[in-house]
Amino acid sequence: TSLEAIHFFCCLFSFWISKMSLTQKIADIESEIARTQKNKATMGHLGLLKAKLAKLKREVITAGSKGAGGGGGEGFDVSKTGDARVGLIGFPSVGKSTLLTKMTGTFSESADYEFTTLTCVPGVIRYKGAKIQLLDLPGIIEGAKDGKGRGKQVIGVARTCNLILLVLDASKPMTHKRLIEHELEGYGIRLNKKPADIRIRRTERGGLTISRVEESPKLPDELVTSICKEYKINNAEISIKTRSTVDDLIDAIEGNRIYIPCMYVLNMIDRITIEELDLLNQIPNYCMISAFHEWNLEELMEKIWGYLDLIRIYTKPKGQIPDYSQPIVLPRRFSSVGQLCQRIHKTLGDQLKYANVWGLSVKHNPQKVGKDHVLLDEDVIQIVKKI
Image (tube, rainbow, N blue to C red; front, side, top):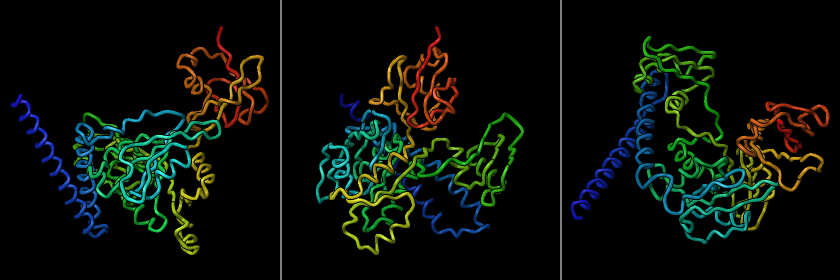
């Protein structure tokens, strides 16, 4: 009915106004942080500004996920398949679509003009027995974290990846690198970082108790207290076990950060000089390629495998030779016998009596092991069930 239509458009307008006001508040705080001198006298003020900024960004992310600007959307709901997911992120026309086509054989439209790719295009790489899903995401633009372009959908999909390949134009890599990192940071993605060991246990009374294993000059107790009060945390036991910063504390309080390994892929190296190549050689976590000419794609694939940190386990049925054609691929950090059983079938762990293992993880071959035994790459396993 006409009344329902009016109500719908009023709600939509209210959402748009609230979103615009949030974006303006974020811009104002970011501007104040940028113009504030950084020293001991301003440390507390900057810490509170960062806390307010994190809260506003959380509101934008939450509002976006409920509305049309979330991580999903037409062309972005790609099922996660294979043993790992790798996302290609970069500005328009840096060669992401060409790279996907060359590495997977999946066609993704590419051209000399910007924004050729408008949706998420998936492909699959088969490497060392593993199936790795590679996603070509639309070109990101400045302001993506605030919803510009299809930024929120792109970054929303990026949060589900096991590895991000940040594809950069080799002729202007550092400018693009900093801008994209800023967009991803604003959406709660932390690249090549580990979370600080900060534990916060809320209590009913007793105020704030702060304990430390290591001193953090950039995070004094007074600053911890003021940031906690900004979040209305008045009673809690806070344990800081590593040297930490204000950003680390805010991330621990927010609790919604995603820590993802990232490799910087410097594409189109055929367009720069040898001297520029030597200069770019100093960038950490990088790989130089030319997707169009297929230069250095083998090294890129080896580095992807190393960053994903996967291992292959071969199964051996009783009385038969191992099946080397279809390994079970696991993340190294989840590679115990019990976790392997869980990967095969959720009830197999309960049925496990013991396992015979051949390979580098045991002292003699075969060796009888239990569910807590940690497997290594290319181990062979024979699972023995309870009778």
